Length: 282
Ligand SMILES: NC(=O)c1ccc[n+]([C@@H]2O[C@H](COP(=O)([O-])OP(=O)(O)OC[C@H]3O[C@@H](n4cnc5c(N)ncnc54)[C@H](OP(=O)(O)O)[C@@H]3O)[C@@H](O)[C@H]2O)c1
Image (tube, rainbow, N blue to C red):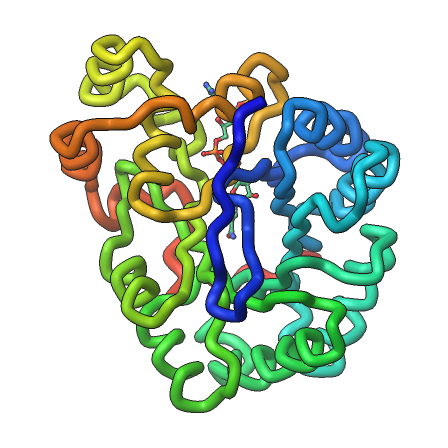
């Protein structure tokens, strides 16, 4: 079986560099999809309260026969729960839905700088409580821009272990990634294959053809060679298997650079800009 490297976080814990994302998998299909992922060998699942499928993730882990300690589970605080008391209740709800006594990583899903009087710092300090009591083994953020990370550095005690942001060949997000490298914050690249849109790009397909790999394998390999964590989503078993086999080949420096050269900056985003995103689910 392919062996997935672990990356060491700034708190000394480790995270498998490749995981399985469950965004947009309906709750009723999640247990089956995650069971398949665990069978293939994935040991890192990325969910969120917003996805409405934490229960399915927990069910699959329990029925897998694996030790809880062998599977890395991430979830995220939903946008409506940034006030400290709400965050505490929401985190209890996440653990209850998962049926677990801890998560390996808990993130603030979005900074929401235009809401809550721009106060994501007290939200972050509430996550620090979850780390201190051991129910979140590591804590981090998602969709934080450099200014948001700098504010945490000035006003909080714990440096986020990760920042989960949109990164793929069409939006390489280099400034935020560079801040992470400089401050020991691991970048997790969400929508790593740009929801599939980058797979037909001639630069990607030509590299794939040249080295005898698929476009998805080439793009996922590009991410891991840059040091980021990835968790592609698929509910197609053959693609789940394909996406898992990215540690038996390497890309040349020229190919890594050619893929990075596809960056379109803001235009390349598949999701919202974190500076203005203010969605609160019903
Ligand atoms: N923190 C955040 O704000 C945030 C935002 C978005 C995503 N995420 C995380 O990142 C994860 C991945 O992002 P994502 O789900 O948006 O997009 P993605 O992983 O870039 O792409 C998923 C899409 O690509 C298709 N696909 C997967 N593997 C493929 C392959 N080998 N060949 C061809 N098509 C393939 C899937 O189709 P099928 O399923 O039909 O196979 C699906 O339509 C999410 O599940 C979530 O965990 C986080």
